[in-house]
Image (cartoon, rainbow, N blue to C red):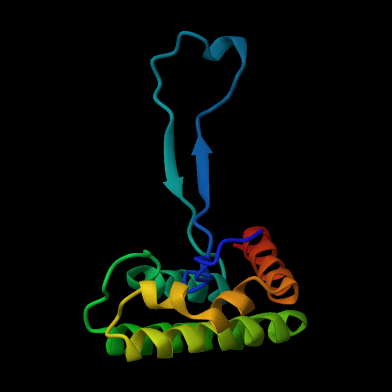
Length: 152
């Protein structure tokens, strides 16, 4: 069963920070090397991936349960704008999935605004919990996450 705290505000969470390991060969020549392994965050390679990164950053303030978000109106406006951009740049075959997820995100944002940014208000709302646990919603969310992981 999926958690009722699956806020999906971080969907383009949203969505994926891809780490690329460099210098992690496993040949015999590498053994005993003093070379350190480093990680770097992969850069977005398309306008869609860049929009996903912006959306994820915009959603960060509202993606932590149990805290009050200051200036929720500005944060919500930022999340809305970023999600609209992601949806506009999404592949046509995933548009319906993005629209479904954005519908729940919009409802969550309205609840947050009505409750002064209290993230616990999302867990207390039975409609949000019901939709977040709906198999069709989760399938749409999974398709989006799979696409972002594969593309970005």
